[in-house]
Length: 268
Length: 169
Image (cartoon, rainbow over all chains, first blue to last red; front, side):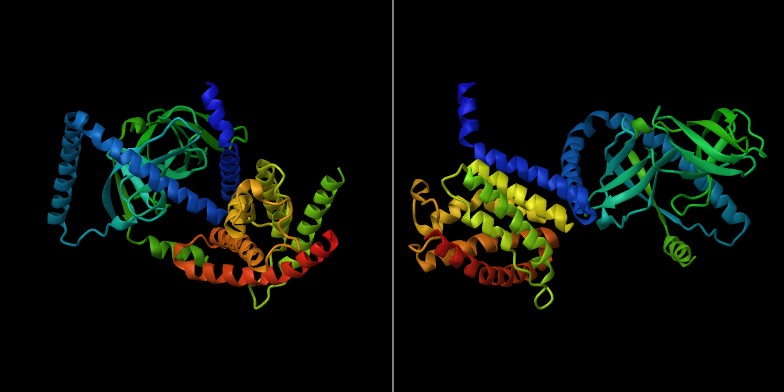
């Protein structure tokens, strides 16, 4: 103990310097957006490489389970393929579908904070850039936030500041889905006008009004609803189909038309 | 006691001059002398080194707050506050315990003095510009800026140092 104390005293100046330097860097990152994003980028690529090493070792232990998940997903895709081929036979004109997918693996997932982020193992080297949508085999994951060469961070849909455009499968009335930080499988649907009928068990799907996600991905079911105090809108509790706490693989959605849509929005 | 008050006054005066006058010079569009480093140059070596580090930090921090810059001045002047004894040892060829209370006096040789001033100012400016630009690709621009600003700063600091020497005698 005495020795530790002596060492501390001997390097007192250096320690003071390091702690003040740390404080200044925090100050710098809080005050300037440019410096903040630079520091975030460094920390993203650092934590990305650390977690990829960790994942590589852990991966061997649950290969069997993952194979099972992939198999079921492939089965599901096979059905879609058949439907698609069927449609192609019926009408020879090709379907104009403006989305492409890129597969990626989750390196770090969080769902316990108010604002959750994920890190995935694809970066701008793989053609990923900010504001692309991310989905899993059975639901939404989030939106790309920042990319480095090999990694990207994803804002999870379990993030207090995010609102997603949703609609009812049965009658296309649309509203916004948001997360209030409670349980990772419950979200809130707001801004649905009370002129639309709602009943428990209704299915919610993605609306096509954002360029992040294609229309019609099933999200969850209504478990309870009530009127807001103003009486014009519903306040609906939604239970998600997908369990965001157990995801390993995701698909990044590239909207081929997003440039055009963005240009239009900027012109408004 | 008298000395402490003089240091505090010097500290405040240097910051005010820096923020309200010298930061607005912009010679050739980008050159500003950083006079406030003078505080760390003339501050006595007999004082505690931890104190110097802390004062360096405080100096940069107040300047950052007043001039609305992010944190570059803080890190730069904190670092030269920390490195100052090593610069002095290098420039004056003395041991740490042999350093005189006031390095800048009539007895100091002009070459030693220039070497010390240039080291302090150049390292300070280099860190400052490096943090402001924060881009490895513009390292040449950073070096060029630091060099010319250091020369300008020395030109401004030199006559003030000479005046202080005369006063000290």
